[in-house]
Image (cartoon, rainbow, N blue to C red):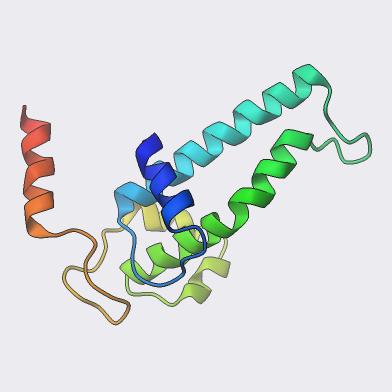
Length: 128
């Protein structure tokens, strides 16, 4: 999960083109939420909050850093299901993205992020 997170954040930091698999998107979102919770706990223990807003300093810095990859991953996930990136503005549509499989084959946004051999290798891992 951490490897997928690093791939999305470091290699595709500001990429809004192409497609991202459901597995990668879910791993990125879950890791992001986990990091936010951990940083908020650290902020609360260390009392690193801004008095007026009660926002933790570490959490704020991390969220500013992760905002662009988060938007980029969401846009690429929209592309994977064949939707325009404007669908990201609809509240709770990301939950639907987690449950919806991507378009098979090439769509207008690019190649399928899952090739046949990779899919078969992953199926084999689940059986072992």
